[in-house]
Image (cartoon, rainbow, N blue to C red; front, top):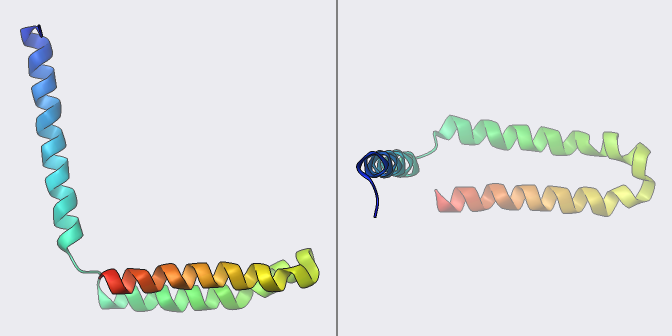
Length: 85
């Protein structure tokens, strides 16, 4: 049996959870601004272009498949984000 003060605390926590869930649903329903998407694509391209300059001295020829895997995974994640949007 739950005592009255504990029940009030539990009810308050459930109400907060419901309010936060509603806020997350509102965020989910908002589209990502086009300018944000473009900036993210440009930043990712520039970052990927400079990645060999950092990894090549450290890894040598091993950096080629490592860079390919990193770029493939990041660009794939970005593309999935565009598709979901």
